[in-house]
Image 1 (tube, rainbow, N blue to C red):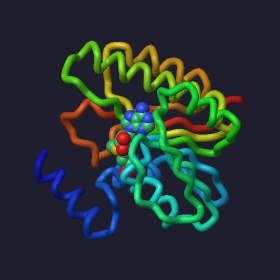
Image 2: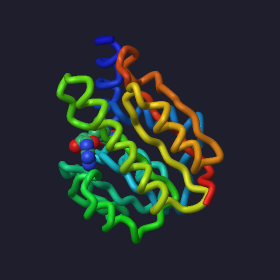
Image 3: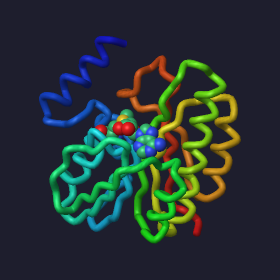
Image 4: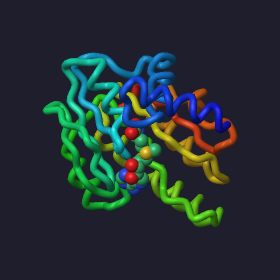
Length: 191
Ligand SMILES: C[S@@+](CC[C@H](N)C(=O)[O-])C[C@H]1O[C@@H](n2cnc3c(N)ncnc32)[C@H](O)[C@@H]1O
């Protein structure tokens, strides 16, 4: 596990990415073809910024809104940062006037080690992200949403499946094997 972490960490350093997390996105994009030119993207849990960095490097005509509790160091006029918590209703209301082609969420709640509390936090986050997908994602839009598997996960996943024609769970190779981390890949939003 350590060797694998080192491998992606070193690779990110060598290739100038802000985080090893980028290799999960690259793998997902390669397999599911999420991005293209002329898209508007919401990047939830954007810091330190490697996911947005990948999209900005690969496409010329893209616009990204990044949101996080901590600011990233991205200086690009195609990128706007909003400092805030996605679980905050006011932040979600601010975003509700936007319409995105793609919504990403690599956010993970602060874990306490107490399973019931952590599961509840993950549930809350996934439901709030789902609210944004419902309101702010265009018809036929795509999403990638990180989750930690927990007891109620499949009940939440069913809610995601309802609003997309294509919905799959995927664990990238760059994700630590023994972690509960997975990604929900969503394409072709119904309405
Ligand atoms: C694993 S990092 C994301 C890495 C990012 N995708 C990248 O490529 O650099 C998770 C981020 O989610 C943010 N985060 C966690 N909970 C959040 C919340 N409720 N609202 C906004 N951001 C949150 C954290 O501050 C952290 O920066």
